[in-house]
Length: 133
Image 1 (cartoon, one colour):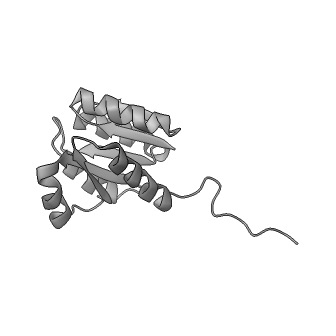
Image 2 (cartoon, helix red, strand yellow):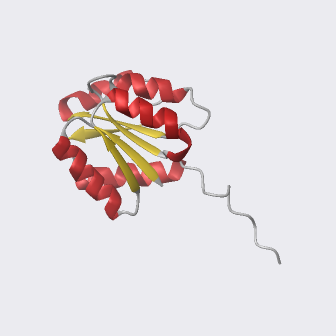
């Protein structure tokens, strides 16, 4: 599984990248929305999970989530924001946003989001095939 982290807070991005890599994910980190859009456009088929900060320079995570909703194979998209704004994000839920993370990040919440994302991601090679008797 390959994750894209788009966050202009380098400390949060590094912490999150370490957590994801520790769980075996390949990770690409960018610091602004324009770069995230470029990565998603160039390698959308390779990105399974997009973790986007709500407020980003260049293009905000909200707009990126809406753009991803129209993709033929969109990644599981998680919006991140300060804890005070997560409730607002949930109420207004932009198209394409499937989950939310509050900042500062809590390892247990990241693990829960990853578990939910894994349930929604297609399995490589398609669904499991029944065993032949």
